[in-house]
Image 1 (cartoon, rainbow, N blue to C red):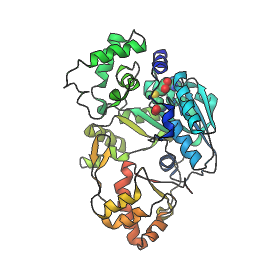
Image 2 (cartoon, rainbow, N blue to C red):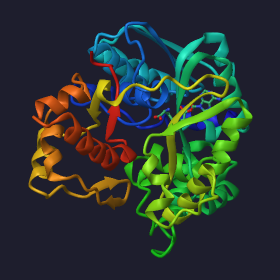
Image 3 (cartoon, rainbow, N blue to C red):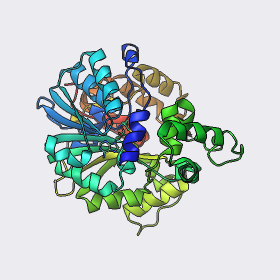
Length: 396
Ligand SMILES: C[S@@+](CC[C@H](N)C(=O)[O-])C[C@H]1O[C@@H](n2cnc3c(N)ncnc32)[C@H](O)[C@@H]1O
């Protein structure tokens, strides 16, 4: 663990300048409140209740800042605890929260293996951390102990196939330079990297770019001393072994075998996802949500009563493109995905504002309930697999 702490003391990750908080908010999965609600609580969380959050391995604060900012802006009560081994990372995260003037955030320096001592929590963000633990399952178990019944985990862990080229380089750099202090490791690894052939799998891998962004990114991707990638099966097994159950991936479409082949009738859901992961070949991280294995799944809500949100899209622009039948391909990592939405659904899209139910969206688009619902289901089938459509009462 000391090597890992030394790395993040020398290279807080990701590289961030607190001054940039004045210009932009970095958003991403997991830990978008609407996405959390959709994936964990079927869009039915009572947001008038204080959300107690742990950001476990919070780094320089991307997940922390996103959550605190979105909850604060929406006027929802929250209490967030940030926890990380690295005090250099904490300093940056603290400065970012201060720049934004966000209240109700507590900072702790320590290991997530002691998470329960700071809890309990309704939601835990653990993004890009567990694969750096010597025993990721011990980390998962510790987080499970810190969670209240009915709570949820938002995770990101590394996946192998989209990271082709990374692990042989990590092994070589660790063998050659692992005995040096982090800054010298970086210097030597960069010099060696510059001599690799253009045809090296890493140089040919369009899924990865972190090593080109910053020194911290280069170190994190290629010089890490403790880094394990999980296949979807290995990740599901690790969750199950530690009392968790996968609720949903943020982009379940990436694991949909039907996109590639006829699905054998007797193939279970996990084997389908594992086979799709091998066929797709581009998945470099698994991003999603898990709940406690023993918790009952949240109740179903009638479709007409659900409140839809479009994630990150300019709704009016998208509606115009759908009406004109020129919706551009979706960008999912390094892939481009075709989605088909009937032009007649454009009016429905235009009425989505995060506060209006499907019933009222259909009425606003001047569709009959029957035809409106038929079109809505097509729209949902096109967008939900890619994490572009969620249901949540967050903004009500
Ligand atoms: C790759 S960074 C991810 C940071 C942040 N979650 C994000 O997604 O931007 C990993 C972070 O996990 C922290 N970390 C690693 N092992 C930890 C542990 N056992 N307990 C707490 N933090 C840990 C590191 O110090 C580092 O800041």
